[in-house]
Image (cartoon, rainbow, N blue to C red; front, side, top):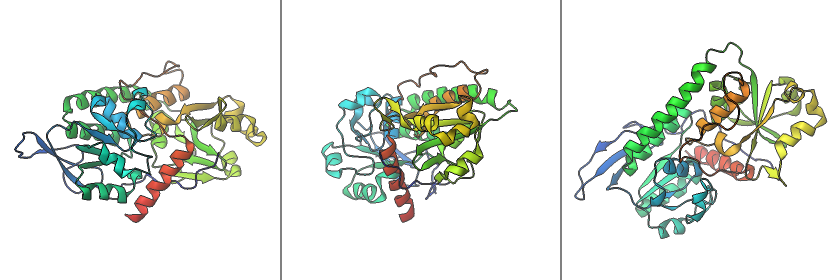
Amino acid sequence: MQSPSAAPTQDARTAAPTATPAGTHAPAADATGRAVTVTDDYGEIVTIRGIPQRIVSLAPSNTEILYALGLEDRIVGVTDYCNYPPETSDKPKVGGYSTINIEKVLAANPDLIFAATGNTEDVVNRLRMIGMTVVTLNPLTVDDVLRDTELAGTATGQEEQARTCVEELQARIVAVTDKTEAQEEKPSVAHVVWYDPIWVSGNGTFQNEVITMAGGTNALGSVEGWGIVGLEEFITTNPEYIIVSSGTGMGDEGRDVVYDYFMNEPRMQRLDAVRDGHVYVVDADIISRGSPRIVDALEEVAAILHPDLFETGTPTATPAVQSPGFGVIPLALAFLAVLLTRTKR
């Protein structure tokens, strides 16, 4: 298994919306009836006429949001990495996250496409030039996920479903933060994406936000976005807790390879987290995605850091929102695609 070769920072959108805030809409006249105008996460103003009946999702996180809104029957295309919920396996595939097959997208005859940053600017622009209606989602924070869920609901005519979903997610977030914010002790936490070299989640990432909201501090918060840290630096930092990613592509014959590295590497035995049994595996699919399941990750990490405050075990399932995920190699490729896209912008 090869290690990631590039990773982006998430400190800001490259092009912030300049018109109507994302998630809002304004009525527009249309001979067929309904029409709404939304501003997506790159400030593109998009008009959707009628109720979209054929939707293509170009990112696992988008697919997860669409399932959360009860739109599974209208989804006619997803990426190769859209593997959750299980029903996505029956959907036509339109290519990889950063290797979208435009011909397959067109063959699905969509009336609405939900794109993402990692699809590359060239692909999104080409789809628009062909005449496709494209809304790009690029959530960078938990609040962004909630806002993009509402945006998707507006674009698809599922406003009420989106409102209900967001209210439920907000209630679950508050149930965690009301307890963790009152805690004086904020244990130091490192989230490790890969081990050779050691890739960690720094500031400006979903993982950093999850750690903070769960009542911890990011031991490697000085790192910008996802980045590499040296072995000695990691050992010197000596986090109290280590959270490692697991999931598709992260294991070998049933083993979690990143977890095994920390538990078996002789030099890592010097770490308090290893000696105290504070190395935990969290599914990469829930902790690395801009989707409603990021709240599942928050609940799980909070229970790890403060077991006295939360019941341990499986966190509350996000209703119908579970989405597909990346393994470490596809995730690295997605990071690279995002980085290249932002560099071009």
